[in-house]
Length: 328
Image 1 (cartoon, helix red, strand yellow):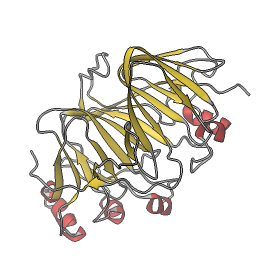
Image 2 (image 1 turned 120 degrees about the horizontal axis):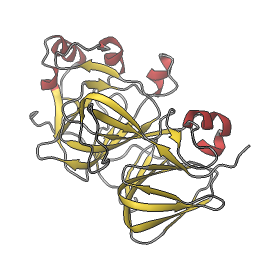
Image 3 (image 1 turned 60 degrees about the vertical axis):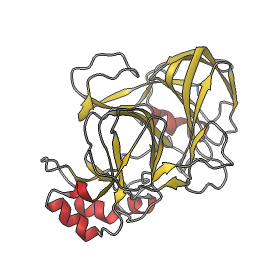
């Protein structure tokens, strides 16, 4: 069996009607059709470097199990975190994701709690998190039928640097004019509740069954106990943002893999027994849980985000729950 080492991942670009053709400053590539998402650590993403080049993250998770996914992963043969860039040019459909219990009742391995870090936001950029206070599921269902459901959502103004926590069961959507980094449980279970009257399939029965009228979704408020680079800690993930001018030395305990995502600049990842990896804005590197030590050397300077599974008992993050504003 070949030895594991840090993987440079090949991104998967997902065409979406609400996406954009200009992916700068994350990617310089020209695209013919609107791109909504760049998936970095999905099961189908493939390794770009070393002897395992061309292998998918799903195949490697099944082969190496805890050596890759870590002791804390819920499943020993599935990579635990999915990271994406989102490029919304217009409003997404209104959606909800089930929690673990609801997902498993319907035959899925897990639910989907996620978070969004706002890298860029144009003036007036908004997301919607949850229903307005006092709105019932029956009122929301009727508003869907009458094509006015967006009026019952909590619309929130967002700005670069915001971290938003989207607990499973939260009705939500994203407006245009921003670039987000999304970290989530590895799940693609999405129930589309509303699409502004466009003729797309809806999942109203399943979606309303998964909807919670009150969740902890909102802008994350830092805890005093959090390290300065921590953006959010939850039962499902920990996300950090680190700006490097000097080398970063990191140790892993085998509990969780690390995901490194370059959001500005370039650097080199080094680990014993492997060829160095150069990665730059838009790239992701997966550090398997069994790799005990790695170093990131900035090439002049790099801003990166690091995602991992949380250690110990972690509560949901403290948030400023949405105070609704009008949709723009």
